[in-house]
Image (cartoon, rainbow, N blue to C red; front, side, top):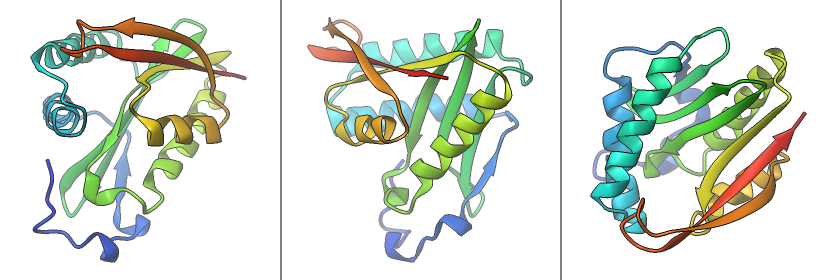
Amino acid sequence: MSNSTLINPSKILLEDIQIRTELKVGDLPFVIQSHSDLYQKEYNYGKTFDYYVIKGIAEFFEVYTPEKSRVWVCEHEGKRIGFLSLMERGEAAQLRYFFMDENYRGIGLGNHLMQLFLKFLKEKDYKSCYLWTTTEQLAAAALYKKFGFQWVEDMPSDSTFDRPVIEQKYEFIL
């Protein structure tokens, strides 16, 4: 997923990124492969994590309705470089599959995506939102907290990630 030999991160601006909200052919395999590459490289998650993501993406697609769910697909120069989804869970929503290529971090894209996410959440009259992450993902947790998500639960897990981790649940109440 990394394009570090092709991209000079200091020259990328938020305005250079296109964000679309319609799901297209190739988006879901992109999410699966990107999660596999990124989380194996950065956190040493294994093939069981791949399977977890595949199952989750399949579930997302099966219940996806643009009226209540949303994707934000980030592209730069015609290449997918990031993704975020809001999955309907009744009166609540779930934030899932939030990531971006490492070359695009630090330009404000994460903040911008969170603003778009919360705007859609409010427009669709959700009562709350939640997400799961791990204690290792400090930058992600800081971003969620910055936007008003509150940590509510820890859960040890050793099977989903092919090694022991602590999963954390965050909630946002409207």
